[in-house]
Amino acid sequence: MKVDIDMGAAPAGAKAMLDLEELLATRLLVQGNSGSGKSHLLRRLLEQSAQWVQQCVIDPEGDFVTLADRYGHVVVDGARTESELTRIAARIRQHRVSVVLDLEGLDVEQQMRCAAAFLGGLFDAERDFWYPILVVVDEAQLFAPAVAGEVSDEARKLSLGAMTNLMCRGRKRGLAGVIATQRLAKLAKNVAAEASNFLMGRTFLDIDMARAADLLGMERRQAEQFRDLARGHFVALGPALSRRPLAVTIGPVETSARSASPKLTPLPQPGEDARDLIFTPAPEERRAAVRRTPPPPAPTPTADILNQLNQAKAAVAETVSSPPSLFPEIDEAERNGMIDAVMHDMLNDPDASFRTDAVLYQDFLVRCRIRRIQGDPLSLPAFRRNLAVARAGIDGETAQGAPWQRALELSTSLPDDVQGVFFIVAQAAVKGAACPSDATLARAYGTHSARRARRLLTYFEEQGLIVVRTDFTGNRVVAFPDLGCETAAGDPNGPDGDLQEPQAAE
Image (cartoon, rainbow, N blue to C red):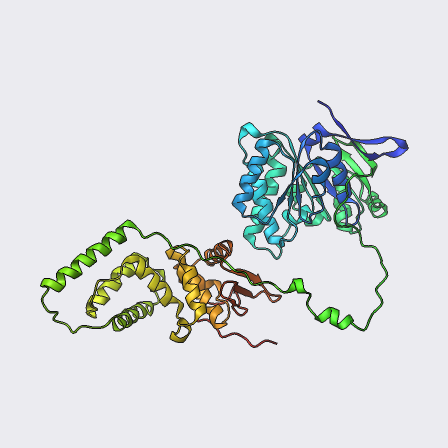
C-alpha cells in the first residue's frame, strides 16, 4: 500500500510528499543547527503518519509528550530500571501501541542507558511481533556520539550499539530509524551512513556543511547555501523524498512542544523586598520528614524453633544431671565481649574481607574453642549479623544512640550479605563522616568491583532506605530519611581506607 505524507511546500507551488512505505525501508536523517526547525519537522512527520504506522519517539527533552493528548501516544517515563524498560519495549511491539519515551530530567549517561535498554527491547522482540514501527530519535548525537565524551565507556558502548542495530539491522525487524542531529560531525559515521533519505537544514560550520554536501551529492561550493536556509526550510534527497536535491518548506503542525524559543519579556520592577524573595525559602521548599512504617518482623524459621526447643530440653537435662564445669562461669556481658574480641581479631586480617562467610564462620568457631568461650556457639545467621556490625566499626557511645538502634532495625529487611555495606554507610551518616568510597564499600561486600558497590547503593535507594545525591564537585552524599541524618560529601572514586571526618562547611 502506497501512502504519501504531506511534509509541506516545494518549489513552483507543489507539495513536498514523502513515501511512507519507502521511508520504512530506507530510513531518514535530519540535520540542522539548534533553531533550524528539526523538532518541528519531526512533529510534522509524526502527526501526518500517526494513523498509518506505529510510532516510537526517543525524546531527551520531553518535547513530544504533547502527542499523547491528540494522537493517543502513551508516555513512558524513563526514570525506570533498565530491565523494566526492556520489558515495556517488548510489550509495545506485541500490542502495537505508539509511545513517547520521556527522558527529561535524567543526566546524559542515564539517558544513554535508558535509550539503549529501550531500543534493545524493541530490537529483540519475538519474530511474530516484527510489525513496522517508526522509531524517531531526537538529538541522536547524544545516543550515538562520534567520539568519547564525559560519560563512561560502558554507557557509550551500550547506546552506540543500540543505535547501530536500529539503523543497520533494524529494517528486517520492522524498525525504521528516523534520527535528527544538530551536527553531523558529532554523530557516529556508521549510524549516519545507513540512512538513504536526508533533510538538511540551516548549518554554519564548514565541516558540517561539507559533510552535508557529500551526503546530498552536491559540490563543495554549493554547500554555502545551507547557511542561508531559514527556519523550517530544508533540502531533501532520497528515494522516499526526491531523486534530486529539493528545497522543502515544512508545513504547520497541530500540536506544540512544551518548550519554545525564548522571547524577550520586560523585567519586573525591583522592589524593597527583592532580597527577602531571594533568600527566604518558600513553604513548599521545606521538605517534610519522611515517615515509614517499620516492616513486620520476619517469621521465625522452623529449624530455629526446633533448635530452641532442643536447647531448652538440654538446659533442663544439664540442671538435673550435668557435672560441674571445669572452667569458671562467665556472665552474658563478658561472653559477648569475648565474642566481639574474636570478631575484631578476624577482621584485622586484610584478606578476611574477601573470604566467604562459611570460611569465616569455621575460623570463628575454632577461635572460640581456643579462647574457651562457654555456651552454645553462634548460629550462622547470627554470626553474619555480628560480623556485619563489627565491620562497620561503630564505637560504644554511638552504638547506644537512637539513630544507630533505628539503623539496626532497618537492616533486618535486607539480605544478610549486604547488611555490612548498609552498616558502613549508616555509621558514616550517624557520625556525620564523609561518604565511603566505592572501593571501601566493595571491600565490605567482599569484592574488588566498584561497580557492584554502586549497584548496592542503588538497591538501598530502591528499597526506600537512602537517598543518594551528588554535589557540584562530584562528591557523593547519602541521606537516611528514617534516621534524620546524612553523610558528609565524599569522593566516590577515592581510595579504600578508613572513613574520614566531615569537612568544615565553607
